[in-house]
Amino acid sequence: MQGSQQGSSQNKVWQSAVIISILAAIIINALSNFFPISGQNIGEISNTIFAPVLITPANYAFAIWGLIYIGLIAFGIYQASPAQRDNARLEKVRAPIVAACVFQMVWVFLFTAQQFWLSVVLMFGILLSLIAAYGWSRMESSELRGANRVAQDEKIFSQIPISLYLGWISVASIVNVASALYISGWDGWGIAPVVWTGVMLAIAAAMTTIITIQFQDAAFGFVIVWALIAIAVRQSGQLALSATAFGLAIALLLLIGFTQYKSKQYKSGDL
Image 1 (cartoon, one colour):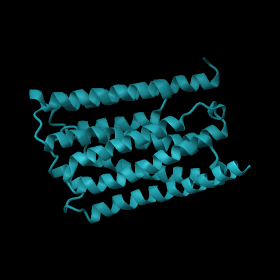
Image 2 (cartoon, helix red, strand yellow; image 1 turned 45 degrees about the vertical axis):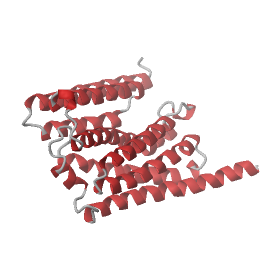
Image 3 (cartoon, one colour; image 1 turned 180 degrees about the horizontal axis):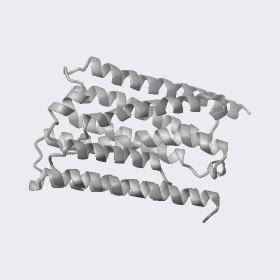
Image 4 (cartoon, one colour; image 1 turned 135 degrees about the horizontal axis):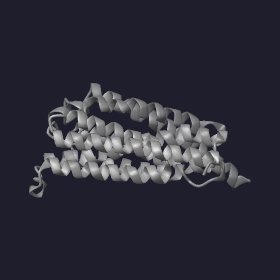
């Protein structure tokens, strides 16, 4: 009995930590836009120092952070409810989400301070934390099979927000590494930047294909499609690269539609 009470008390602490870390990450990110350390905020650095980096999406694409933060706030409120305090999946998800938010705050500091390789290290910290959260949020459970209320609520307020966050950080990790390599003067082993960018886009699409098929995860896939279209828009002057990004986006949209259709057929008992 005492162990159960102690575990519940620890969960209360983690519930609070999740909300605090999410709000802190949002505030730090907002402040970095108005009071950047080096005089340039994240967007300005991307548009000036890293303007030649071909895999950077168009500026409008970063508006997705608004959706990600709304999702994280919804997750924070959902997991903080007394009914979810001892949810086994959420117990394991809380620490990785807190870690991701803390890493993100440090990343903002390092990137705006133009410590780009150190920012890559923190970016991978965010990525690995979210991979852990993603895995735990999708643990097998009889409660999450089917279309019952518990399954739907947890999908909307836990799985989808984590998918959105992980999807965009997956894109951001590739862009962050490409930017650090660019600032270091890496010549791509003599291979043209357009070719390298095409390879990275193909890898991102392949990764998304695996996740979409394995987890029927439309949210993750839509984030990657959003990024691919934004890259195609930004690189409209590079016809081959723009066509590649747009073509991969269309292919992923078709795959997402197909997997969602098959999933609905399976749940309805048609398969």
